[in-house]
Length: 288
Image 1 (tube, one colour):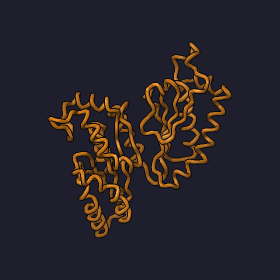
Image 2: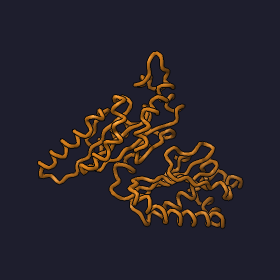
Image 3: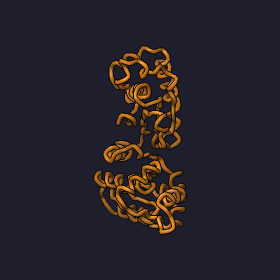
Image 4: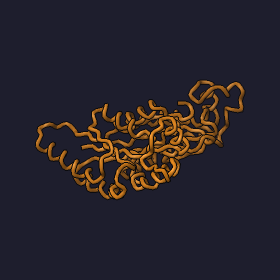
């Protein structure tokens, strides 16, 4: 049985993620009380034992601040018990910057589950973050939806979560430091020390995916050395993450604006490791 637990702050996209998994054949339950999670999995296991079907059971549940607070504290301790039942369990945590969550609530005019006449929306969001921290600490994958569209999130869940089997899933993510470091990055590499095509007028309007910038950066010794060093580092250490039962690793490559150097290197790393590993993706935060 495979179980995906979806959690995160309200407005971060949990319902969207659950709908994607439902479309992909997962049996989905929204806002399941934590206390019912273990009995549910035990019942599904018994039903499977009594069935001749060899089909793998796929289950996804959403657990968030609507749960009883005492129940939320129980979840980290339940994960080993679920694994002892033979359940392949993963926790997916979604979040976004507070200002964006406020905008989303303003647009939908929905009530936050923790808001009261005495507690503002901003206070409710902060209380929710503290309440869900034990679950966030258990997450195999954290997705920052701040700059994602609905379609971006759907694709991310479909590619990184639903399509994953046993192998380590690696995402190379380019970004610009002036827009902030990605919240969901596991490894962050700063390439602002490299020659910047932005200062060359004929290259400024191109990106690191376009041939003029590719030709320029490919012939810069410092860029070539950086690429070689990053490939060597990741080749050496990705197996260690895998052996430590990590399901996902997000490798973030950052330059100033996220247009040239980081994009070029993320593409090069993607091409290098896609030839070696089956579950590799690339995403450009400032371009997508």
